[in-house]
Length: 356
Ligand SMILES: [Zn+2]
Image (tube, rainbow, N blue to C red; front, side, top):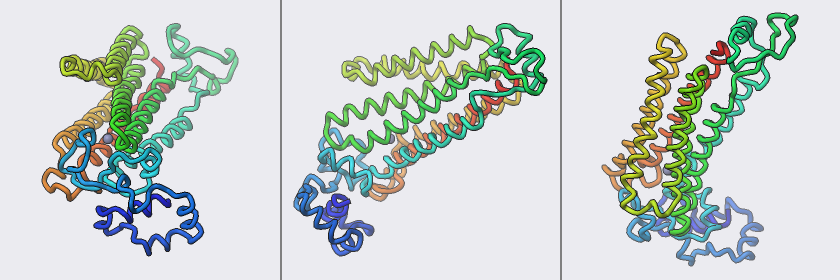
């Protein structure tokens, strides 16, 4: 708090902001005792510390130059402590950090909600239990004795782990992204590390997105279930290796990376097509395919906005704090992940009601 107020007030860039802290405003926000405490601690975020200024694009080191259309309000090589504390201050990464941090907490709540909708122990109706009993290879099995009332036949619920694996993948992606945007400005080494973790998070989100789709669509066809899950997992692991190992940064590995991404995409499209061919007459298949198409639209729009760098390309410097492409990209990613969550609920309800 001491840092944020004094650092922002000291910044020549922040002085242009309408919501910047003036010295007098700071004194309304912080008690005299707290101000004294700050002074006693000799915090380095003093007005004379050039390291804590927000700077323009041209003043950045090469490793922080990603988008020349965002022109101001950059943190550059700040000390780690102040970099972490800057989560609560205004700069051009503030909304990038918070869009995915809030997304992370939304998914945490959605996980709790899903757990309440589909508890681990479940009583299925008699018809489903009969269906389960008629198929020995079924994932259901009887626990209750034969004399139990039909309404109270307890069966093993459909495995939830594919759905929760997806939720974990989404939360990992959102948290890594948020951390990457918060910490990358600290140093070239931190940026290198955080960008790779961010990339690993994106891979985790993509791969885990297909687990509910494949597992529940082909729950009764172990061959295709394992084939698809194995393929997407292998490609995901390969992509994670590519994103984490420095040797794969070299230009000669670019085609390898491109092929891996293509394979990840293809391994996702194939089971969706297969699902529609096998279960096209099922409303659940159509609804989940609709959600998956919507997910594709959100992610597709996100990639287009991200690559085109709009709207800041049209008015450079006007969207530095609010509204630049990366913030829109983040919101679209959360929207895409949410549609896949909705699809996951339909898959679970489908298998919970019908078994195979
Ligand atoms: Zn991002």
